[in-house]
Length: 215
Image (cartoon, rainbow, N blue to C red):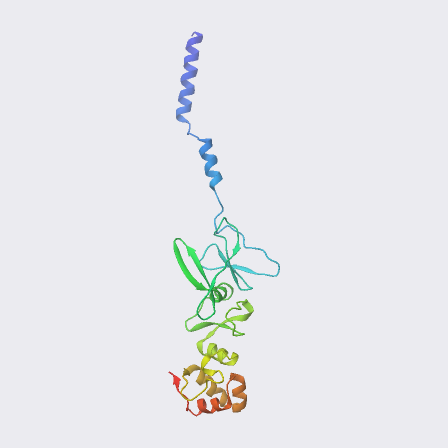
């Protein structure tokens, strides 16, 4: 076999090997690797001294801190504290996004859901100090609507029980009246008035059913 025949065979073998091997595009592969980013599931939680963080159930890329804030890693995979708004009753709210879905939620509710437990039927988010802007975990709890009204009366934030607005035609929730009547069975009216932040005359009206209430 002459040298020219050997060259022809080697060229044919190289062509066959190239056709049978998988095609690779280094430039394309490099482009794909450059565009890869860690998912929101893989992002570690923020680290702050003295602050605990927990992911929000059902909302990947979002977390809550026990000092009362919502955090998001949606932009460039960096955790940032969200700046929300205040609703009509003074509660901080934020808008979360996921798969094209947006939902505006109360910050205090998100914190309780993440750190404590999901809200049970009939439960409300209550603030121990009566300040809806204070969403520190230690200030929040799940409780009944009746207990929430009692907090409002005790803190003087319930409009129907503020001094100067207490008169026979005032309507207040029946749950608050029930709490006043129950407490008045075992305590003097003066103590009840001080405990609920209302006047002695108002206690008399509520206990003896002179005041109008909402059923």
